[in-house]
Image 1 (cartoon, rainbow, N blue to C red):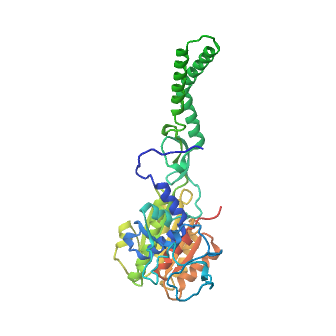
Image 2 (cartoon, rainbow, N blue to C red):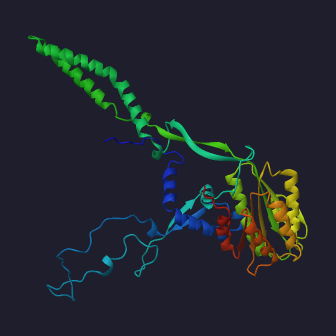
Image 3 (cartoon, rainbow, N blue to C red):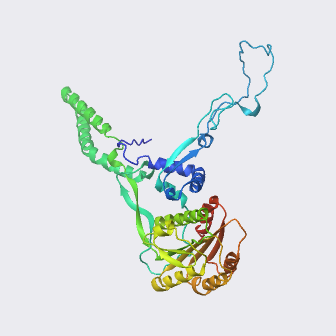
Length: 423
């Protein structure tokens, strides 16, 4: 049996594989904690790491132990409840308390704390946006937008234990042992032949035979000292990432900033767009984002003004749709770009403007976009804008409308809108 001993010094990231294995094992608990963290955080802290608390009972390892069956003889000193020959009833529930701990205090005042696990920013975002993608992405022109794919890239002499290639390592070990012992084995074979010849020759020198025996023993000892496998023999599977050009895409973000949008509603809209921004910039390279704020008038703004500007006014939703269409026609031709749009509003709009929004979407926008998502942030009954948009979802499969009532709804709605589609 071969024993692999890792003699390398502990380097940075040495425990990465164990850390990833732990995350995979308790992914359900960690993802739930990540989902809860999105709703607790402020807008500026959405993309930071997180401390995950896992109940101790969930990380306890299974153990084998003796049951309560069988015949046993016990001495109970100071017993005032039983007499000799009495039978003690079997404990109910199959055993006593404790063992693995539950994270709660017991009736005796003792207990175990939950296990706290710190995940990094990258791990947090990886779990946050797992299994999400831009829907209906098609390959128009193979430039700008780049996805990364992991692929096998040969072998390396350094790596983590889980990537070790046993066949390559043993092949290297065999080559090293052959190179280090081949000369000694030839010399050993020659000495053994000479020794056999002298032992078969009458009157041979005893001193020469003894010297040959000592030389053979020394050579055999040197050969056995050559290790079966050494650090130099280890080979690890090497993985690398390469760019896979797909296509170019643009995301239009439309946000209602009218007077009917109170601060709490705007904060929920900001949370949604920040999640969207982090998802897009993390998943795709060089993807362009266009920010549009609107009340009675629509304006294209930069990222900072989109999230922090205090400008407000009345509500005419069609102004944002018109501006989006104008920008798309000038800068992002539909035959060259994958066009996406996300709109957030409280649903309040002039009654005679909602049919115009329906017409703009039906005739100009939806035929050009890959996906148009609309979220309505309100607790009250839906108004004309929602009803007009709902009618469009029956005609177009590239449009989705969702309702957000409270902060806790943001992340589930976001995942529902951008979940990975089955191939």
